[in-house]
Amino acid sequence: MRSRLYPVFKYTVIALWACFVAGPFFWAMTTSFKNANAVQGGPTYIPWVQYKPTLTGWRNIFGGAGGIDVIDPFINSAIVTIAASAISLALGSLAAYALSRYRFKLGFIKNSDIVFFFVSQRIMPPVVLVIPFFYLLQWGGLLDSIPGLVIVTVALLLPIAVWVMVDFFNGIPREIDEMAMLDGCPPFQTFVRAILPNSLPGLTVAAMFCAVFGWNDFFFAFRLTFTEVQTLPQAVVALNSSIPPWWTLSAAALFGVAPLILLALWVERLLSKGNLSGAVR
Amino acid sequence: MDGLRRHKSMFLLPGLLTLFLIIIFPLLFTIRVSLSGWNVSNPRMDFIGGANYAAMLHDSRFWASITRLILLAGGTVLIQYVIGFGMALLVWREARGRRFWRVLFLVPMMTTPVVMAAIWQTIFHESLGPANDLLGMLGLTKIPWLTESGPALVALMTVEVWQWTPFMFLLLLAGLLSLPKEPFMAAAIDGASTWRTFWKVTFPLMAPVSVAAIIIRLIEASKLSDSVYVLTSGGPGSSTETPGYYLYIQGLRDQQTGYGGAMSLTYLVLMIVTLTVVAALLTRAFKLKGDS
Image (cartoon, rainbow over all chains, first blue to last red):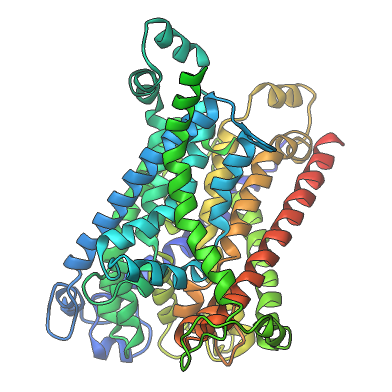
C-alpha cells in the first residue's frame, strides 16, 4: 500500500526538524568555547578544526573576571520555582478536588464557571499585572525579595495546577472516595489517604508544568526584583544588553536551561507510559 | 448538610481566595489608574475621566501593534499546529529511535524563552551569525535579519515556532497515544488508504485535543513580549512591536502609568473577546469536520 519512498521521506523530514530543533543548542555549545577572536572571525562550528577552544566563557559564569556569577541566581530561581510550585500544587489540588467531587452553586455560578475563572487567569498578560504588583509589593515591603516573587509567581502557576488536576481527579473513580468514607474517614483524610496516593501521575504532570513556567518566568523577576534577588533568566538577559561577550552568554544560557533539558527526558517517560493523556482530555 | 458545605469550602476556598486576591487588586488598580493622569512628572491618582482612552483611539502605534499581534499569533500558532501534528504523527507508532526523537522534539518548550531568544539573536547576527552563513552555503544572498522590518518579523516568527511547536507536539502526541485502537482496525479491514484513514478517523478523533491545544497556544501567544524585548526590542523602528511590548515601553519604561493602564484594559478586553469568538468558531469548525 505505502510507497517505497515513504520511509525515505519520513526520516528526511524527521532529520530536518531535528536539525532545526537542535541547532540553537549546538550553536550555543560551540560558541561557549570560543574567545573574542574566534567569534569575530565569522561563524565557525567545529572546535580544534576551525577554531581553538578555550574555557573563558565557562570560567566567566562562575565569577571569572568580567563575567557574572550564575550560582546565586540559580539558587534564587530554584527557591522561587520550588516554593511557588509547591504552594500552587497544594492549593490547586485541594480546589481541583472540591471542583471534581462536590457541586457548587452560587446564583448562576456553577462548577464549570469556577474552573473557567481559574484557567482564564492565564490570559492576563504579565505586563498588565506588573505595575499594580509593583505597588502592592512595595506596600507590603516585599519588593526585591524572594517571598514577593513567590506570591506573584503563584498567580501564574495556580491556574495550571487547577487545570491539570481537575481533569485528573475526574478520571479517578468515585468509588475510592466512597470506600474511604464508609470506613469512617472524614473528607480531608479521604483526600490525603485515598486520593492523593492515586494521583501521583497527575501531580507529576502538574508539577512539571509549574516547574517549567516558574523557572522560565522573566518579566515579573525583571520588574519586581533588582539587586538583592536576581533570577537566572534575569542574569542571562543582563549579559545580552551590554556588548555581548557571546561565549559568556552561551555558557550562561546552557547552564540556565540544562535542568530543563533533563526534565524533557522525564516528560517523555510519562508520555510513553500514557500518563499525559489525562491532562489533555 | 452543614458539615458537607463546610468541607466543600475548606477544599475550594484557599486556592480560590488566593488567586482572587492576587488578581483583583491589579485589576481594580488598573481600572482606576486608567482614569488618572498619572505619569512620570505627575505620579498622582487624580481624575481626568476618559482622556487616556481618547488619546489611545488616535495612537496608531498601539493599533498597529494589535494588528501585528493578531497576524503573528495566528500565523505562528497555525504553523506550530501543522508541524506539531505532523511530527507527532511521524513518531507516533512505528519509527526507528522514536523515544529519542520524542525527547529531542520536546526540549525547546522546556527552555527559557528569553534565554533562547538571546541565543537566537546571535544566530541572526548579520555577519557573525550562522543563519546568514547557512544561506551563503546554499548560494543565497545575506539577509539583514534584525535591522529590516520584514526579515525581523520572520526571525521573530522563527523563534516562536521553534520555542512552542514542541508544546503542540506534546499535547497532540499525548492525544494520539490515548486514542482507542478499534476505529483504526475497522479502517484497516475496510482497506482504507493512509490518507483516507487520517481524514476520516484520526483527524476527527483528534478534534477535541486539537481545539484545546490551539486555544491554549493562542492564549499564550497573545501575551508575546519577552522574546520581542530580547530579540529585536520592538525594532527596527516599531516594526516588531506587540501590544505587550508597547505597553512595557509606555507604562513601565516611560512611566506613563495612567495611559498604560488604559491601553492595558483595552488590550485585555480585546484579547478576551477575540479569543472567546475564536474558541467558539474553532469548536464549531472541528465539530462539523468530525460529523461529515
